[in-house]
Structure formats: structure tokens, C-alpha cells
Amino acid sequence: MRALGVAHQALGDVTTAISYFEKLNNLAQTSGEKDKERLAATHLYAAYNLMAAEADGNGDLMLALAYREKGLTAANSSEERSMVSKAHFMLGQAHEKLAEMSHLNEAVANYKPYLTLCEQAEDNEGQGAACFALARTYQRLENHSTSQQYLQRYLQLAEATGKPSSQAEACCALGVLYNQQGDYVNAVFFLERFFELARSMGDRVMLDKARAYLGIAKANSILPSYTKLVTTDLDALLAWKNKRVPFAAVPQASATG
Image (cartoon, rainbow, N blue to C red; front, side, top):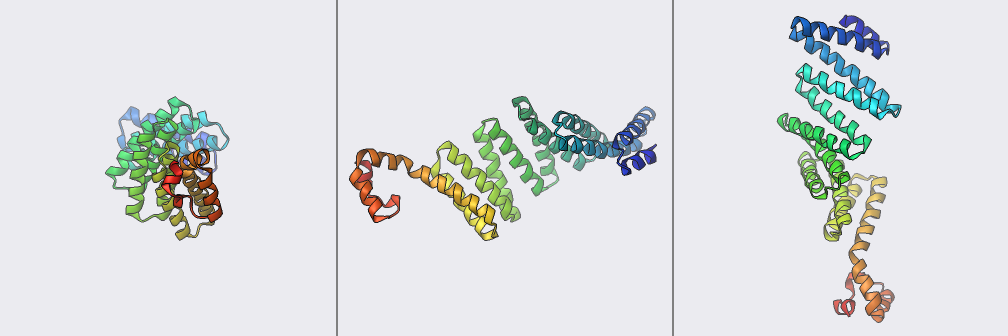
């Protein structure tokens, strides 16, 4: 029965393969043969993931979610920790794609055990992926403080593993988050780091993105003073424009009237 399932899966007939693997799993459960049950679960896990990926590619997110849920059940039956870990992460992604509040909370409920399992396995890359996924999801849930905590942790993990692309991703996300919160000092700090990392990697697309984000954050940081200057001290504003010096160089007394 296992051989038939493997053969059908190799031919691309995953639905039939699943039926054979499920029969094998039921027989193993009935007879109490744990080794065969774990083997069947391993095959089911792989087959369910193939079906989930196909459904996802076709835009059927609910069907993809159903297969990811089956995948987690199979992974738990396999008793393979790495399999359980990946199943939680993929199920979290499936929930996150559905975007509704209840699904975002379910995404968090799956990303957290993924993070715990990665910690136990001392998998720094997995921990980073979990932290970034949690930060992204909490931001969509408008829990910005928790999002910030996971982004900071993601940055620390990226620094520890020496991965500049992950560091850049973390710095960009932190800079954007601080900018949204009106903390322009920290926004500029992290976006400047993002800019330097992009430049060191020679990534022109990332560099253009960093330059644009940094420009926005810097503009936001001077906007209150600029607005006050326009409304209270037009002479100082004209003097600044004529001198073409950085706005920060405008005397504080002029900016405050």
C-alpha cells in the first residue's frame, strides 16, 4: 500500500497517493504498529503539503489552509520535531494570508510554537524567521509594541549570524515602524543603518528603497519645526533658503520665534 502511494505521488496523482497513505495510517493505528503509523504520517505530511501548495497557487486559500491543518496533524503523528516545527510555520503563513483578525490570531498561535521549537533546536535562522513573522503579524493586529520587540530580537539574531540581508530587513522594518509612531529619531537611526547595509551589499534596488524611506523619515523629523518657522518667522525661512544650508542649521531662536 505504501509502494502504491509512493508510485502515484511520483506520477503526480497526489490525491490517490493520499488515499493509500491514509489507509496505511488507519491500518497501523488499528494494529497498534507505531513505526508504520509514523511512516504513514511522514508520507501524508509531504503529500498534504503538495496539495496545499497547489491550492495556494490556484488562489484557493481556504483549501490550502485545510491541507496545512492536516499537515500539522500528520507531523504530530510522525513525532519528528523538525516536521512539527515546519508544519506550525506553514500553517501560520496560511492563516496570515487570509488576513482576517481571527486568522491573524491563529497565525500568532502557530508562529509561537515554531519559535519555541527553533529555540530548542538552536536554529537561529528559524528563530529569525519566526520573530519576523510574529512582528509582521502583530503589526497587522496593530500591536506595535509587541511587533517592535520581535523586530529587535530579529535584528539581534541577524547580527549574531552575520547576515546583512536580514539585518537590512530588520532595520528597514524598525525604521518604518518608528516613523509611523512619530519617533523620528529612532526612525532615522534605523533607516540610516538600512541605507548603509544596502550600500555595503551593492543592492541598487534596496539602496533606492532605503534612500526614499530615509528621506521621508528625515523630512518628517523637521516638519514640525519647518511648519512653525513658516508661520512665525518668514525672514529666517527666507534666509535659510538663500543660504542653502541644512535645515538643522537654522538658529533655534529663529525657529522658535
